[in-house]
Length: 234
Image 1 (cartoon, rainbow, N blue to C red):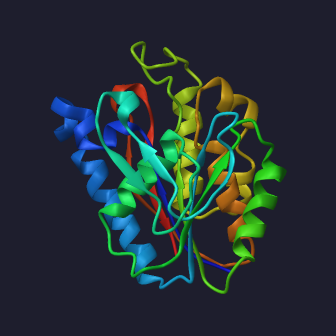
Image 2 (image 1 turned 180 degrees about the vertical axis):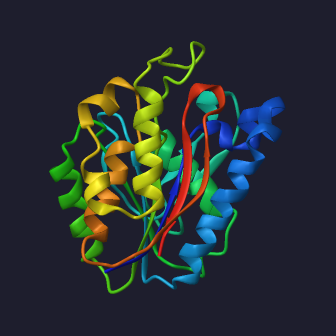
């Protein structure tokens, strides 16, 4: 059963070594992510799963101990998803998740990862979440994903006037743990707006069905034209 979840953005810029001179600009996001992970620790889960978007070939389950590298971003830094013998290389989003977890006390809770196809349907995502929730007595999720990347002309996806509305709705449903609302987020629109968090958020919604969790939005901002949301469900 799902007992808690933390929703965090996953830009590699969250890692100060990657951000370099821009590191101070994202300090508020890092602080709120740490607060969200504190909620996961307080829930005392039996199993912790890190869920995030993944490109083709890097989807599916990542066993404990799987490692990710930030070498592709010019930084000699490797992180590991908990303790174990996992050998699958982590996609960027899960590597960010592993880095976030490395800064918190997890009390030796088993950790695994799940890379989600950004084009998966809402029902496919929800079913994956239901399976995760049923995998242990007390399950916690760290759910990674950004909102739209189209908030300004300098954003990775350029400016799209639909982006602000999509992000506002995402902030509302994630901040209120509105399960039907999360599942109703438009997959096609999310893909057009480069909102990589849509599929992982809908995995969370499936996992939360019937759990009666309450939500709280900790942070919402769109630096660099990309929407970053931090929320907790508990």
